[in-house]
Length: 271
Image (cartoon, rainbow, N blue to C red; front, top):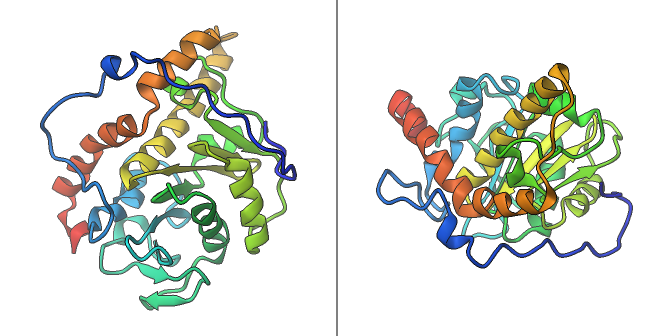
């Protein structure tokens, strides 16, 4: 658990096994690939529709903010006043690093900017950050602890997610966003106590996949505890599984079927 008020340096995560690359289960050829870079990539706006189709989150409180490359000062934000299935490439709002609207005419979600702008500032490697008030993520966040390594999927987050162990109401101040970014550190996801969870990735696909997988893992942990006492995966094996399941390419690759699905079923997303 991370103390959000602490400024002490974070320990370096264990390095992946040397033979991890040869063991990656996601190294396959072919298939429709999402763009490596987000510039001009309208499919980045598919995240809210993924949540709708997967029955995750709330209709309005779903946010994916993507860094506009190469304009490092820009952000792309889903407008606060849209339902999930209304989001398209031509109706999002772009704001600069000061929160000023530079493109679009919809209101900006102040809380989203306060958090996401600081996450992007602290994590130049993170092209995208995903957050929603999903059911199981919100419920698990009230426990103020990290997920236990009880399934293969959750091992993707082994020693790679943090807890922001505080709650001060709706985040409207960028200073609070800085505290959240500090708690996240160099990890792929942070649990916001009494709020939900936020994931980051080097691509939109990766950030979205980590968010969705974490939500499902919270659900699995609740159900496992309701049936008995889950058996934890040993640390060494959980670490090894993370090197196979938790790398950036794994997140991006696993998101591709969802990408194909939503584009085929709802092509207006690209309008």
